[in-house]
Image (cartoon, rainbow, N blue to C red; front, side):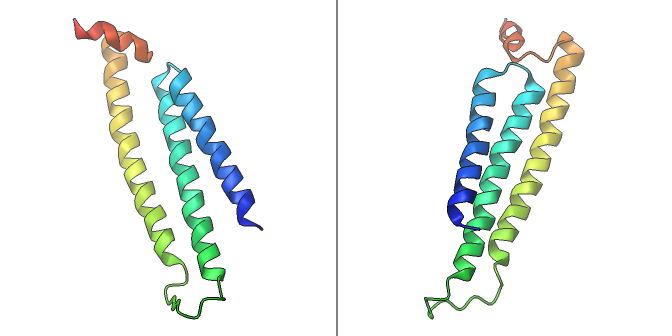
Length: 112
């Protein structure tokens, strides 16, 4: 599969995530859109890793890890995303207990 298709898919996923973060008010949907953006970045990391590994024209490349570097980065991104979701959902639960709403705009009233 050509790399252009992976780039287009990741761009579409990232754009959907950005539009969702900017337009939605529900905190849970905002977190889902952030996860969508992180997964788009993961897709590009793995795609470019496979492209780099498939580049046989450069003999100076001595890749002994079989593309595991990018997959290791993806694993760490997924671990950080899981920790972010855990903390974010705890904040959302506490917000819902106090305000009985998960609307992000409702948080402006909590400043006073």
